[in-house]
Length: 248
Image (cartoon, rainbow, N blue to C red; front, side, top):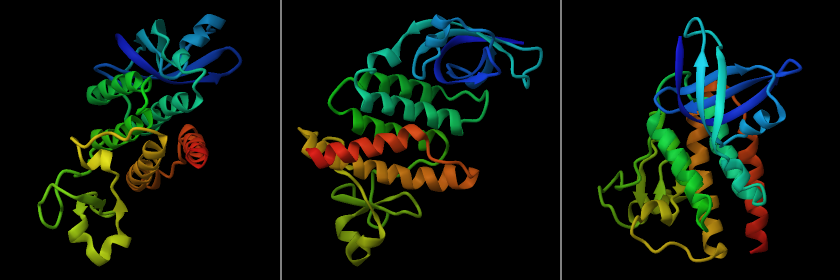
C-alpha cells in the first residue's frame, strides 16, 4: 500500500539509534505516522515541526507503521527561529494535531487552517490567530463552540460570556447574576466586524482570555477523556505571554 502527497510535519522522534518516527498531517489522508531510516543531518532538519513536505508513505498493510520518504517544500520552522513565541505557537498547533487526530482520517479543513495559521504567525495578531486555530481545531473534532448568538435570547450583539457546559455564547444582559459562573468571551471572537486591538496592551489580554476559553474545552473534550497532558509548547507559550503581558 502506498500514499503520497503534501503534508505538514507534526513531530519527529528518535527510534533506536539512527531512525525517526515521523508524524504528518497529510492533505487528503489526515494524521500519518511512519519510519524514516537513517536520516542524514539535512534530512533531520527537514522534519522540523511545521515544515511542509512532499512525501511518500509505503507499507504492506494500512495498519502497519510504514516507511516515509520526503522532500522539503517550505522550511516554515526556520522562519520563526528568532521569534520564540511564534515558534511555540506553531509547535502548539502541531502538538495538538499529533495528540488528538485519529490516524489516516482526512481532516483537510484542519490542514488548510494550519497553513493559514502559518501565514498569520508573521503579523502582529499571531496570538489571536493561534486562539482562533484552537477554536477551529475543536470544531474539526466535533466539539464546535457556538459564539454567534446568545443561548438564552438568540441575540447576536453584546455577547460577553460562554457557558462552560454547552460552549454557547451568552450576552451580558442575559448573564446577569450568573456571570461569575461563565467564561469571558474576548471581543475578537465575538465581534467579527469590531476593530482589532492596536497594541500589546490590548492584544495580550484578549489572547490570554481566548486561551483560557479554548483551553477549558480542549481539556474537557480531549485531555480529560484521553488522560493526556497539555502540549509542552502550549504551556511554554502561555508562560511567555504572561511575561509579555506583565512587561507591556
